[in-house]
Image: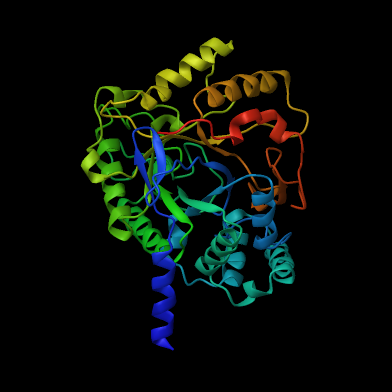
Length: 400
């Protein structure tokens, strides 16, 4: 029996989807063919420490919905606390979430009961086991996964008082912004998730940290702390699983990688696995015209796609989004401009968000996600015009 288990594990690893980078492209390591990421964000980093929505649907249903609508990838978020306590039972995580999220124990128990009624396997599952089940069901629908370390302490992200914003060991310690961001825990968590991914052949990469953000007194040393800790994080991922892409975002809420132009990371740490990421929303300081918005994106991140530079690597817009019901005129202008820019660059992307609701967010049970692709009960499109809105962004038009 034990030998059979290790055979199956070896089979998983042998059949893993291994990707590499070449210039600005992500390629299948075996065939050399381009792989374009067309992803949706699926949150799993909040107080329950499991992926959202299981009180509404099965992971298999969600995976099939993604695949049938041409998504080939999920950016699946997680907390460091979950990685360091992987054997916590889901039932206990819902109980603990009540006090952490500031809601009643009975309401969380009701949510847990609903989730078990939809997914009976949750009654005996650990939190990491729930991630494993979701990832396996995504694999069954040929959907790839990028694991994203969203926070250390589970909570909604992002601000400058949630304790998750900047490394606690960096200069200018600020408790409000950094109290949960312990460097050793972060490195151990990244390493643990990279190792966990070895048994899941559709996990193709890990994003080191979502929306790094400094407050006054932090990141005032020409980004020295950023260079130091990002390098350590990349090494931790590579130690856990050298097959994974390593996704790196800049500070200022993942809006700024302009400084890489003058000082590149040590690329030898990454091998052929480095992918840049950035975020863009209608509130991201985009200016008053599409021309200024496009210039901002190009100056802050888009230039990284220029061929044959020390910094050249794939660029992944890992978060963008807008209200799926009744977007404002400003949002419509933002959408039009962003889509043109992404189409012109044949970009990799991940829409925020897949989830139609959260178990609990900011003290509210069954919080509705207005940006969600899925409706509040996760049964289908919130706004079926989304594919038309993003135009040719689903299509692959270029390659090496």
